[in-house]
Image (cartoon, rainbow, N blue to C red; front, top):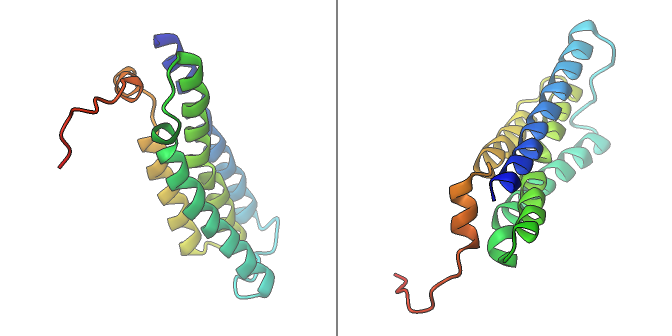
Length: 144
């Protein structure tokens, strides 16, 4: 179990490294004027914004609900499901950062990236979380 959590932590923190690389590259390109910011009110700009927002609306809840949906029984199954959860919950983070700078520091895209960062935080793999999610549900347990 500990080895599974360790491997999942590599995936978890690599997502943050990817976001930091995107942030650094886009900030550098924006501050040096290496590109012309996109018009956020153009048709293509609005389509890109809609795609990014719908990506966040679909993948973040799906990623956070994935373990309950599949109920893994072995460490290997848990690794696959938890790795997918991390990737789905945080894939919008670097995309939102890139869109923030691509649209010339458009605040709404930063909020999308921030929501993905919060979802990324809640997908952190720990040994206790893994034990709790792999524990079989007791059908005699009352629910309120």
